[in-house]
Length: 329
Ligand SMILES: C[S@@+](CC[C@H](N)C(=O)[O-])C[C@H]1O[C@@H](n2cnc3c(N)ncnc32)[C@H](O)[C@@H]1O
Image (cartoon, protein in one colour):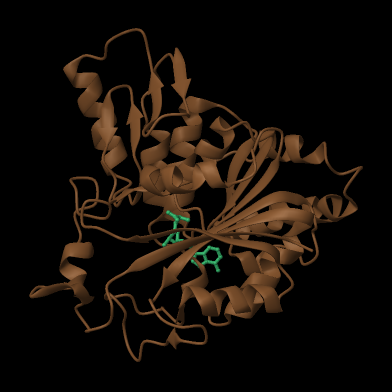
C-alpha cells in the first residue's frame, strides 16, 4: 500500500526550523494525489494491485550497504512462496534501476545502479545526519543507498508512477520512513526551499529543455554551502562545445544538450556554484545497462551502432557520463 503519512510525519519535524517545509507540507497531499491520479495513469491500478498482492514475510534483516538492497528472512521460502513473490514483482516490469534482493529473489535490473554509486561515494561529503534530495530517482535505489550511508532524511522525486510503486514495494518490507519517493518532477518542488544539505541530480539534466533552469532549481533546493552531485551525459570536447542531437540520441527522444566537461563547468559557474570538481568520467558499457529477465525491452546494445560501439545508432558519440560535485553559494 502507498502510504505517505509516516514520512510526512517525519518531515514535519523540520517545519519549525524551516518555514518553507511547513508551507510545502500543506501542498504535498494534493501534489501526491495528482501524481498518482489513476485517471491520468491507466496502468496505475494494475501496479497498485500487484503491490497489494505482495506476500507477507517476516523480515529479519535489511542491508542498505551492499550492491543489492537486500531484505532477508530467517525462514527459507519454499518454491511456491518464491514463485508467488516473483510473479507479483514481475507485475511491476520493467525494473530499470537496482539491483534488489528480496528474500533471495534477485531483481537483476536493467541498470547496475550500484556501479554509479561506487563511482561517486568516495567523492562526496559524508551523508551522515544529512537531509538529501534525489531528483529523478527512479525506483529509489540510490535513496536507499543514501539512507544506508547515514542520511537522516531522503526525499526522492520522480514523475513516473511505476517507479513510485516499485519504491513502495521495497518500503513494504524495509519500513524505514526516513526515505520516500514523491510522485512529481523537480518543477513541482517549491522554489527557494534552501533546505537540503545535498541534492543529487543523476541522469536528469539532459532531459531538461533548459539546463540553466535545472541548475537553478538544484541551487534553490540547497542550503547555502550544500553540495550538489550532478551526473549527466557529456561529450569529449573543448570548453564551449555542446552536442544538441537533431533527432533521437541512443533512441531517446528527449535529449536536449550534451556538453563537454569544460562547457558544463562554465554553466555551473554561471549559476553561482563554487568548489566545482569533475570526479568521474565513464563510458556506459553494455554490462552496466542491458536487458535482463526483469527488463525485457531493448537496452544499450540495441541503441549502439552494430558495426561501431563507439557510436550510437544515430551516429553520435556513444554515451559517456560525468559526475560533478559543487557547492551552493
Ligand atoms: C535516466 S533516469 C535516472 C535515474 C537515476 N537518477 C539514476 O541515475 O540511475 C531519469 C529519471 O528522471 C525522471 N524524470 C523525468 N523528468 C523528470 C523531472 N521533470 N523531474 C524529476 N525527474 C524526472 C524519469 O522518470 C527517470 O526516472
